[in-house]
Length: 239
Image (cartoon, rainbow, N blue to C red; front, side, top):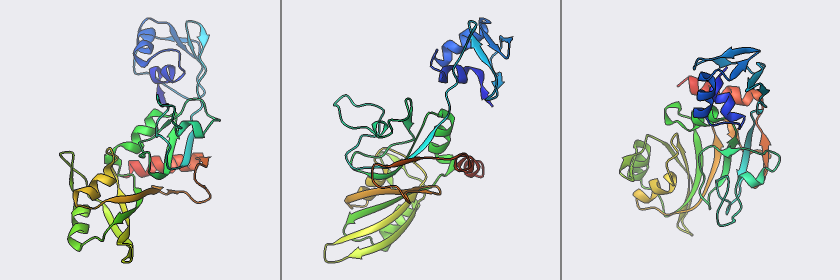
């Protein structure tokens, strides 16, 4: 169930604040009955009308995209660059859950469900975000511990993370590192490595919680099913 004003706002006919004004002005009906108090919750099959006109309730959709390099994580771009939303033309009004940098690839969820997006992004829910980073140089044991325990970026200490060295190539002086975080600060993974003097050469988000990129080539996407969405809510509630 969702709050009535939120459903009205999601339909696109009014902002949430305006929807609240309409409710208080007794211009909203649910299943033929006038609602004049805030806080009322409605079910998916409830019939809602505003000023006597039924609203179109938007179906909630959830996509998993394998974001390519060189695509903006945004709904639009003033410079005309390709956006992640443009890669999913079948859906009219969706937005990305969190961000991936212009040159970062991998798993990205897009949806029109604001509550779900907030749940996925809030650090307290500890949703795993699994990255594979190719860095210049090798990590010392002390540097691994720094990353695990949290480092200072932009004046804020990051939460604890999990770090694993996957591969070391001495001939090219590079390493492949898996790092798992729960936050989504701006350029976070790159800045975490930067804080210990390491440059990230390539970065890919391989997994969000249990959602991996199996079967998705770069630029491809798929819809999440009801079972997957429900499982993500369960994971958040367990924290």
